[in-house]
Each structure stands twice: as structure tokens, then as C-alpha cells.
Image (cartoon, rainbow, N blue to C red):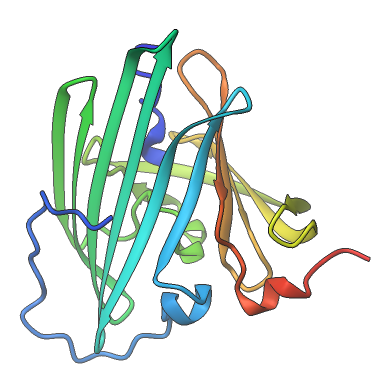
Length: 221
């Protein structure tokens, strides 16, 4: 179980993070994630071998053209009630209009702590914004480096208990210096993420509150 989620870069308010904001932001935002998702708070269950091992949350806060995105991942794994693995990841993105101005992240994995920070890094490995998959590299919020990626797309269907049926989704298989698969609905909302841990065991992040209006009727016939 050691370093279970070293690959979790393919990923709550963050009270431990500095809250640096741009001095001024006068541009217009083409994307409002709260309007897009229908909520300021996304929740994902983290699943390994059919068992929930933690939670991944994304919170949006808009102030005019400034957008703050707080991400938190918490994982706790026990065997016979004995804790064997813990992981706590937090990041804060600050956007001006549609440009990522800064990102800061912290991670505590089994007591080993790390931190990264970057100004104007492009797009990062937080998956709420589908526009990141139009790029050929992403800023790795764990290593502080950019990773080159390649993307293949296909159509897929996902089962959602919330609506009791399948939802059409676009699947993105990412390879290169990062390997993961993400699913988005037809409006570009993030629904699911899958990747392999160090032991080759599948890890899934599955949205638990994906019920924006367009999903209510977007079921297969």
C-alpha cells in the first residue's frame, strides 16, 4: 500500500494554503463552472477494488472575473482496523478571466509532506476544466513540473445511480508522461476519472452529485 497514490497527479477549502489573489482582474470569463455544473461544490467517491477509500472535492468561488478553485483529496486505508495508508492533498487555483494565474498545492502522504507553487503555469492536473485536454502538456501539481501528454477520444456510456440509467459521455484516454482516463458529459462536465496505482490496481473517482439539469434527461433509450 506504500505510495498508493503517487500517480494521483491526474487529480474543501484549503485552509493551509496561501490565498494570494491577482491584484486586479478585468477580463471576461468565458467559463463559469458554477453555471456549468449547477453547483459550487463537486464531490467524487474514490474507489479501489469496489471499496470506497476516500473523497475528492472541488469547490468554486467567483468574485467578478476572478475564480478560485479549491481541491481536496483525502484517503484513509485500514487493514483489520489498522491504518496502513493516509493521503491528504490540497490545491488552490486562482484564475483571472480564463487564464490560470497561480496554483499552490500541498500533499501529506503517510507523513511525508510536499508543496508546489507556480505562476501562470498553463493548465494543471485538476480535471474540472475539460479545456486542459486540448493541450499537449499539463502542470503536475505534485512534482512542480510540466508533463507532456497525448490524448485519444471515444464515445462511451456511464451508469449513474442518481438517475438510474446510462449517460452518454466522451472518454479521453491520456498517455505520455501521465496515464489516466477521464469521462465528460456532452456539456463538458467532468464525471469520472480512472488510473492505476503503483501496484497496477485500478483507482476510480466517480462523481456522487452529478445532477445538473442536462443530466436529468440525458439517459439512453
